[in-house]
Amino acid sequence: MKRILPFFLPVMTIVLTSCQVATETPKVTGGDVRLSGADSAAYLDGISSNPTVTEAEAMKGILLVLDEKRKMNFAEAVAALQERKIVASNWDFQADKAITRGRIAYMAYQAFGLKGGLTLWLTGPSQRYCLKELQFRGFMGAGISYNTITGMEYVSILGRIDEFRQTGKVTGASAREGGQE
Image (cartoon, rainbow, N blue to C red; front, top):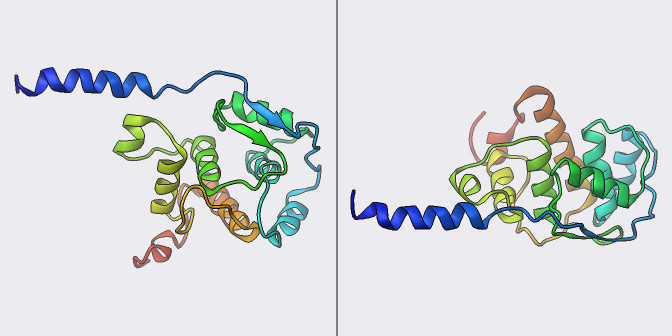
C-alpha cells in the first residue's frame, strides 16, 4: 500500500485537474439563422427525410425535448445550451454544418443528466465516451464519434431520449444490443 500511494496521488491529481471545461465564448458561424417556430410534429416530419442533420437542426431538437418554448436564433440557442452546460464552450459552431454523432451524444448526455461509467467519472464527459455510454444504454446505434447522422437516426434518438426522460428507461434497448427482453 505504501508503494502505491506515492504513485496514485500525483496521477489522480493530474487526471482530476486536467479535465476541466473551458469557460471561453464559443465561435458561432451563422448565428442569425432562425430556428423555426414549428411544432414538434412538423419538426420531426421535416427532419426525418434529411440525409444529414445540421447543428442548428440538432439544437432545435434538443430544445424541443427540453420543452424550450422561446423562439430564438442559432446564436441564442448556442448561448442557452452553453448556459445549461449542454454544449461545450470550446466548440466552434456552424449553423449549416452537419453535426457529428459525438456532439449529439455529448448534448444528450449532458442535457438529461445521465451518469456514466468509470472513464466518464474520471475524465468528465467527452464526445467519444458519451457516445460509447449512449450506445451501451441503447440510445444510439453503432458508429464512431466523428461520423454525421441522418435525419431518421436523429428522430429515433430524440424519441428514445424523450422516452427515457419520461419513464426512466428505454424500451427495447437490450433487444437492440443483442440481449433479450
